[in-house]
Image (tube, rainbow, N blue to C red; front, side, top):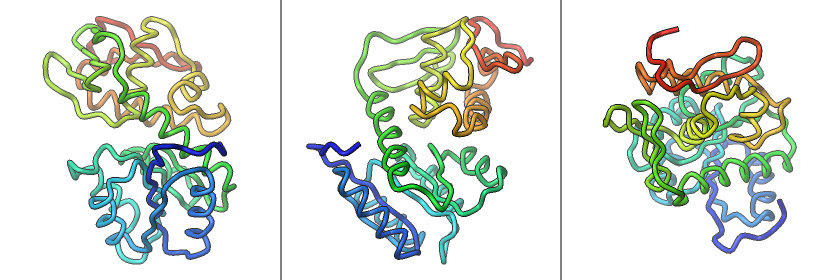
Length: 239
């Protein structure tokens, strides 16, 4: 991902380790992004609200406000709730990664990391966010669920559901392939544009959160044991 971008999407790096900030900023700028930085959670939130970056690279271990709290605030603020977030963490425990995804992170990267992988992850997130915002054909109706591709809006029985860009893309992918089983690896590739060996648990956590947001209609997303998921129109009762 070395091509320059005419629109120079802005990426905000929030981390208190100068070496990590310099590494991220250098490689992201080299890839064509406009980069700004912050070394505390408070400063990161201020910059996010002022600059409205396309994506935030957020460290979990910050000196004032923890990364999880920063993420929670970002997702609760109307001005930043749709901003893409890539978590950086030195913690390798699955529970921390699951917590981050549950709070609304789009992806995560554990330290130490490859700068090239960072750039690729950022690019993958922004490409799917960009596609989700692009106008497409007419709205898609699946049972009580209506997916308006152009407006990037999902409603259930007429009530609008607040989804992140990743959740929207996941639901749209399942809806466009309704009735067909999608393996976790296939969903990782289609939604996250990631290699199938990254973490299939990422898919599980996003499906779990998506079901919760859809309410009774979430039961339409059926788990196919040992394989993956499929969307079955008409199924609304709990499994």
